[in-house]
Image (cartoon, rainbow, N blue to C red):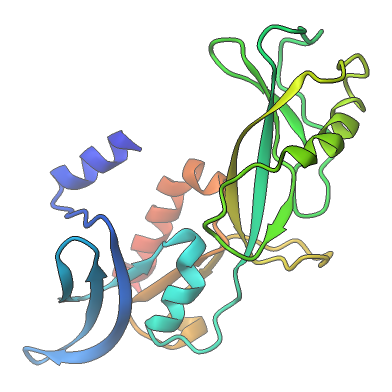
Length: 225
């Protein structure tokens, strides 16, 4: 991420932290149609700026920002928290030394095992549907379901060996209980009718890996038509 930021800023990007998009609209700017984006900054107050193109890649806020930009009825974003648990210290050592991915479940890949560079083992993520995109607490009571899931591929996991670790929240287009899998929706003017705007909706964690390919596709849509 730091490398992406450095490359972007070296090519003229200005990064505005702690800044929210309030609204956006098309306007005449020196005889040409242009976007006017209005923002609210926690550091420097409100400000606005014109631009030729808008790429809404705001993750968990993408549906809200799309609405603020004038898109009618964008796909709704649902929030799926993914909790992780870790092995407690060196109380036990698994018999495997590699990643373990179980069969995927509804809305997720299942509770899999990952090993970091220090050899620490983490398990997750699960799928916990939440109402708020700001709830980053790991509920210790979810450990029971983790023991059940992990013991399907590691039956010897001892009781009391898991501790809450961390969590993340995924922007889902797939509603809770919905059987149809949906993600990575790239909306252009063909879908919403607003020239110069691309919405990236439901971009879950693989979006970081795919970010350069997505950027290449989006720039082609905007620049080549």
